[in-house]
Image (cartoon, rainbow, N blue to C red):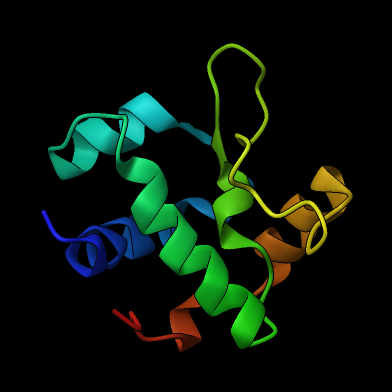
Length: 102
């Protein structure tokens, strides 16, 4: 699966889970789109960059490690230093108004 296709598949899953701040593990997200968990970060990076470039809440804050319960090393803490605030912003944003950009 190409990176843009991966981001396209991930976007609606995260947009739907944003309501209620429903987090998802990397491995579960990978299962949902039918790939191995290791490369899922590439699609998430594309989504994260889109959110930063368009001044949107950090949608990828919803994806967390089973071990830590937090986003992984690729998550941009400069853009979202407070994870709880990021979750609130994601939950309060109207994702239905956004078309899948990928």
